[in-house]
Picture (cartoon, rainbow, N blue to C red):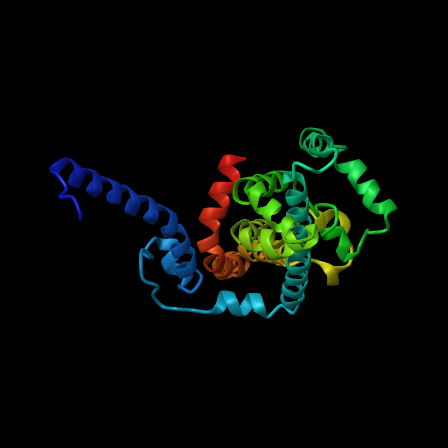
Length: 294
């Protein structure tokens, strides 16, 4: 039986939904503007006439961007780094989080202290570079994956999730039935942890896809550069050439450069925007339960 709402309840709902709609528009409009600006005549964008619907649609920005063959190399490399790196990240993080959630793990507090210690104290950039160099990982794909294979913060989130959602009584019952630790982890713990696993996939995948600083430090070969570096190089080269054209009095090239900038934003953001809806139903439960209790 639904209770009738009084005037105060109705006013609260109206105010609440109004604020939500306003915040939603503030978040979505910049993204919508970039999408429409990437296919709109630059003259309209420059003059401020582009508000909602694109006019005089042009694909010059995307054509100019994808005409560079290196863009496909960057896509392939970023996809490899993201898929491989995320797989390693999630496997190690979930295994570490589950092990640290077990009260019968000998030395659990010591391991936890050592992990947390690294969150506050680190060697810095130069020692990390020397370590990667001594391990022979310079200019290899592993330099983009292994140095940050585990995030301690994410391990703490996963550990808290297991502690909150996999009671010790379940483990005791499984052990009585002859279940081993490995079988319990694979058959019971992992299915119960799908929300937090989805959250970890999203966190790590976004980090790998947007990563560029490691590539600047560790990678020398152009054929191994991720998409972000390729886009950066394309933008810098075009800025240099178009700056000269601008000094020579050509504003047409400068307008095309602005169009290309919007296309670059869309190309670099689209894969993660596509991934998020598939993980969103797990994200709220996993992120809230894991991070807030953590």
